[in-house]
Image 1 (cartoon, chains in turn cyan, red):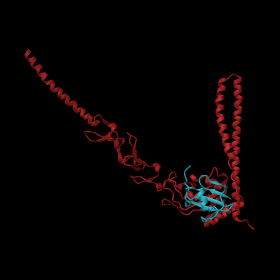
Image 2 (cartoon, each protein chain N blue to C red):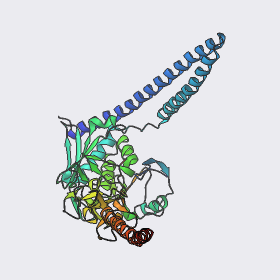
Image 3 (cartoon, helix red, strand yellow):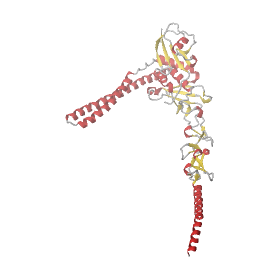
Image 4 (cartoon, each protein chain N blue to C red):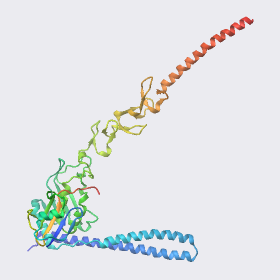
Length: 74
Length: 349
């Protein structure tokens, strides 16, 4: 199953990826953001906040954005 | 029927994103021009090089050879730069529907905090009041200027305006540890911000900016939160920025320029209380470089203390005293001899 995954962490990754059918957003986060706390991120599916048990659907657009990003003088 | 006002800004955003790609193309054209110029320079050198050999001008040939090496470096740099620009993945320009959905989503999430100014071609969102480490910084307005989107790779197309400013005491342009003159130092957010904007992901853009504003990075602020209200001089209490504060190594406190000096012997910065004027030469000396005269007990700089830890005055007095004593001793040893001579003279007479 193909979904659009946008990770707004340092590299600003945004691409289509394949995932297993029946994957919940919670499982997806655990796979993609290993070692990270879900509470530290804003997780949206199709621009909306969803329940952690939400099962991802074909063509969904998942956005993960850190709640804390460090600014710095370049 | 009039066009939905949100569609107007949607059109504008799409045009700006297309313009951003055009700017990339213009940059590539510039790089290619520089590449062609470098090639022409090398072509001329080749011609000069062969002429120099034809005319047995070996010294000139050697110079051209060195120059060619430098020009190859320039050529190689130009090729690499052109390659980087040419191979960049151009972001796909989102369609009108996608951009419209982004704006609709922004409007639903931001409630009344979203402002679309068609005349100025801006979209702005007001943040919640921001507080970092118990320092209240107030609300900020994130203003995205659509007209500046095509130049997003060289200029920041957005501003951060403090609505209820509590600027740093030492610099009123700094309204947030990471905002100066309404511009955000993006740090870790730089790449995600550019990517979000170039792909028309406006909601992500505003979210990332808010995440930066809500985070304090103590390693690289314009002004430290600890020094937001300035650094006070330990002596007079004058508040100033860190650059104008001097640390006294002797008492471990911060002092303003007026309340500090440096030792003319060891060059250490010290406060006025940890040093003083040498009574002999009048120079400022730290207390570590003061030495006490063994006789008068006056403290003065090491430069004004003579051998035997004596000040010049005491040393001179001591020497005078010694001289007198010596003279007296000399007189005492001379008197019996004179008497003897007198006796001998009398006897001989």
